[in-house]
Length: 104
Image (cartoon, rainbow, N blue to C red; front, side, top):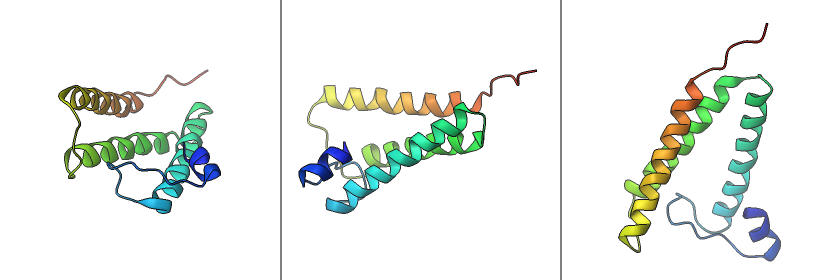
């Protein structure tokens, strides 16, 4: 999303995140690279705790941005979707705590 925004010369507008303008666009790009790196390291069995930390950060950003900020929902259906999305992020964090058995 941020690559498309940067290439088109526009800035993202995501009211649930704590940044605005070009800083927001750059932050989303940086966070996506960090997220991909964390997933890759987890998949290859390196620095698995970093993925756990990453899922916690994502859940925290979502919870803070949607429920502890002045972000306004357009409709009850949008609110319900965000609640389910946030529950999914919490589930991802809890799931990241479960470690697969080590290979012999």
